[in-house]
Length: 161
Image 1 (cartoon, rainbow, N blue to C red):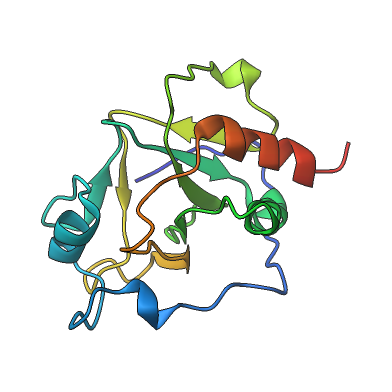
Image 2 (cartoon, rainbow, N blue to C red):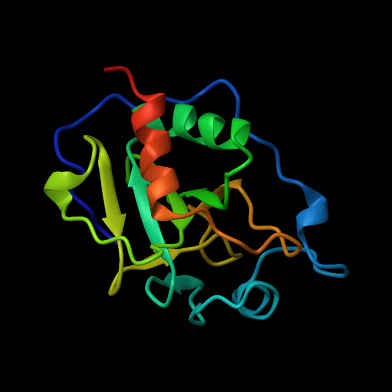
């Protein structure tokens, strides 16, 4: 998956990265797999481990320079859903969100933010997609996603004016 994230920015790694919570996996599962994503979370994931955007789910790609602060803001608000880093040279983290019928054009997005809707496919962390990793993994007991409006508001609140 190749994306042009605009001007080149310095990669920023926040000092606080949430650790993987083993309790987020269903009992008996050892690692994330395409089957696990389909069965435990109800996601549309193909055999390569790529998540199809659409059907009530979008990805919000937030440039690395703003991503850590956005995740921390959402966690303080108890509104942080699954967040992943794609690797593959993509500068930023993808926050999974429910569009909740919100439709915005790219010029309406805050700087450093791109909404990935249908037809995008996002590679999920699996044994075959080793470049992708969960920053905040999905939880089988809390399958809800924050709304797109909540994630956009968090980006705006977490970025300097």
